[in-house]
Length: 255
Image (cartoon, rainbow, N blue to C red; front, side, top):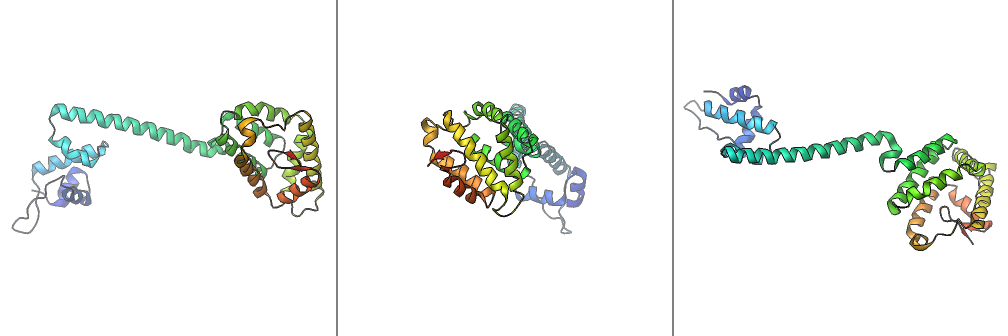
């Protein structure tokens, strides 16, 4: 006859686990003997080993009692159900592992590979990491709102980077974000470049946002707010753009 500590050691569990099994009715609690101790016999040891084995295999404790009492056919059916559940759980965990692994990749967490490739190209032309953070967040908003359009836009965005003025704009804004104040010559250069590019886009019809996209004021307001929050001088730049007859960051419009 074994004490609670001895049966726990024999079955490879903790005393706390044995008491928990008593509490939930999984393992009958023996009466105290004349000395005031609870003693466990062989049947209790066998039951405890079965409980531990099933629990270690991933069987929920709520199902263990039914399985211990089931006949061979019912036991096999229960095992099959648990196996299916475990396979589903493994698939879920594998998906979670992939998502966690993508966390280390940064840009690729929620963005398509084509967008990530575009962001990598921005880094290659000298875009600062601070500005890259704003670009990445902007694409996250875009991909969430227009998921079917994103991959259509990437080739045009990559083509724009063949224009030295666009490259220079990214470089200027990157440098500007590392400085303070609005008297930096880079600030006025950025305005000049944005106006020049906006006028060119207007001339070839690239500023025409047709259909539902053009009417989606909320999404464009979010994108503009993201740009405004990226640097305290963004509003100053927008004021200078307005003086030149233009407004907006992502949906440039002539005033």
